[in-house]
Image (cartoon, rainbow, N blue to C red):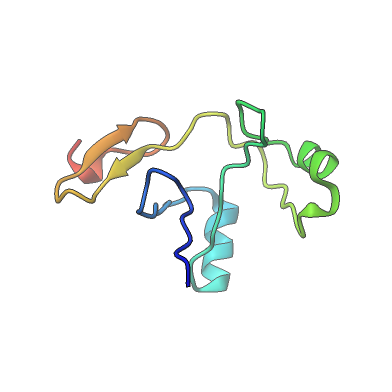
Length: 101
């Protein structure tokens, strides 16, 4: 079977540790991981963050949109753990303290 490549440059996955109460409650109820993605539509530079706009623009292409309040436009911090020591890829939301950065 052909190997599916999700990103042309990366062969790794990322883990997000949420601080949002609704997301934390969903994860606790599901008792397992949840897949999420930043919603940047083709031709757009910024992600969609407003639930009403997401519903208006995507219509029936998604099964569910949960309105959980405004989370802000700041991207999350990205830390690469593949080389044995933490390396900051992108500074943003999230503490660097646990990684000694």
